[in-house]
Length: 293
Image (cartoon, rainbow, N blue to C red; front, top):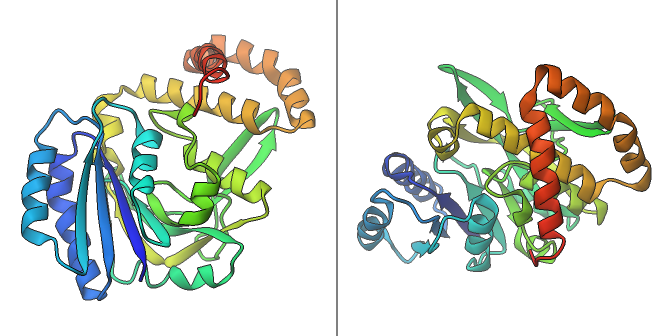
């Protein structure tokens, strides 16, 4: 297998100590040859020192562990893209630190790439939410009242509208052609939906493989430990606006403008984070119009 595994990390020492050995164990059982690239996003814990010791002890010819450090905290897209830029594999697996795989998660997904139009394959995500496992990984989406909406899809089929940047495998040459995740979405959310959307506009496809399984402990990830629920909602709304402004057709943008007064009026009454997200989107979208990605 010509595979690179990229793991963005921010203050994820506890998760790395638990999940990185699990990843190596699965790869060894699968007789996989892979490079594992952990990109540290200027963590304030002891992630890098632990990773260095771990790499010195466990790196082998078959499983190579590479550590890269950001000098300042950049966010998911910057960090994932930096890992991808250092990858040598034909395929790149992106895993969050709060994710660990089950056996054959790569082996079951690779056959999809025999179709040269396939850009990415999403994994079955056993998401631990409120102490219960919720099966995710397949998503459906639609344009509705001026927004691009998405929700959980059918996990029994090989269909999805996007592949998660925290649990999926991507064809590297297409990832590079698309210039990776767009950093306008940093620190998090919507960058993977945007990537899949752009790929599909170029004629590529994305699929879902329910036999490629990962466990995802969302509530223990860096986002929930660093940001309040209000911050998360505001950033998510901000990026939802940006996605529409970046990707919408003329007709979709006109529909967005038509529904905008309705959404903003409703937000002032019931959901202030949407309104603040809108203001933040204007500022960020304008700034990135004059800056390189």
